Length: 406
Ligand SMILES: *Cc1c(COP(=O)(O)O)cnc(C)c1O
Image (cartoon, rainbow, N blue to C red):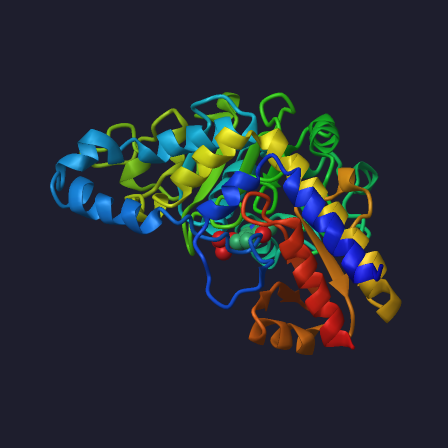
């Protein structure tokens, strides 16, 4: 049997045994798409969404009009935050809100954290972190007179406790890291790193953009202070759907974010002369929430809850393990490098492969209906969103890369 036929047999066996396979047909068809391998950047829409959005416009908005604010929308940022916390964060209610974008929430919470550690003047951040995280940290440092201290871990294996221990000190106010690295997919040891940051007296902010909805976590148990994340990646909230932030209960009322809008005030409708912050998690809000942009993530959260985040992770591991096997057999012989950890325990939901032709090859792949994404300088990311991706689809993607190389 050829390597390809053998891999295809294995893919089909894995798909037949997949306990979450019944979710696959729930996602909308994309005509001409042979393999969608970018669910880690923009999750696919559920098939039911045109009806969901139509019903919202017809009923909640069209019929109830402004009465819907009192009836349901005022509380939606907190209700939906609690749902994300319950389904994906391992966090109790009252500590998570949906708001703004990840970038804006990073700003608000970095400012709040630095202000809460007076006398400390360093923000520790990883040199390879996502650009917006680094840019916003640099802006906050400029505004507050703090200095950035860079962690420079191995690009493939990702940040370790030893990397962080080497730079934190009595000067550290805040450490900002990604749970899953957006390039390599490396998974950081959240409980161990959080603990050593606390030992240094600093606050810990985790960016969950590439882990929420695919990697289980226990924010409450692991002592995490602050976390932010996107909802349009593995939570399938749609382009530009708002982000979420977690602020541990004990910090609420102590850490206050700096954009003092009426939605974070103690009494929203007091219309008083000055801002007085509300004590709870709502203080993270500034202005009117984007209610329509919160629609699409809700049925996806229900699906993740129904599957269970541990089963989602098991499927994710199966998909990335299979992708690594297919890489070994089909791409390594062409000189393609694996830029992700080999051990699934140290990896999130995507893998990255490298070759100096990949910028060009990505265009060929997209033209042929195979859609991964390209990350500078020479990486292709294969994002394998567990509920919407099969092993066979994964293999079709890897085969297309091999064919493009040949
Ligand atoms: C996707 C992503 C973002 C995106 O931030 P936006 O404000 O939604 O544009 C930020 N940080 C990380 C680590 C990401 O992966």
